[in-house]
Image (cartoon, rainbow, N blue to C red):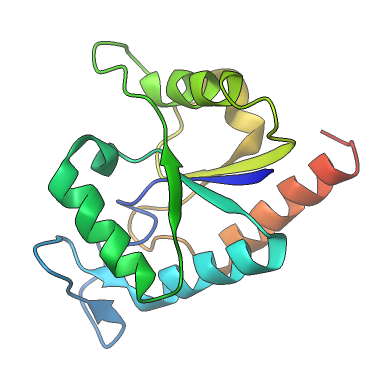
Length: 154
């Protein structure tokens, strides 16, 4: 299995002034960015990735449900979510490591997040700029991380 650990804020949405690419969906704020979402879709399709939600959105049922409905508009589906360790400092990396430990069938993965708290997983991280979200340079970096894994270079 090949996995994309997906954050939401600063990845699928951003802090840019809203424009023609801004998509308001249900009660989600800030607005999703159509370009960011389409680049994630392209990455998932080209690399045959399974999405695992690592965002704080996974901790709120209404947010996860809204996100699932939104992603369905793009034919994207969330396979699973990482566990939550709310009392742990720099927890995102630990939560991903725990999920990976429970899924030994994962051969390759990439993490897309705007925060760099991945610990020893930082080599798998594509850190986005929260002001613009997931952009083409991030797409290329994610593909490079996955290519290196596939070729045993990482």
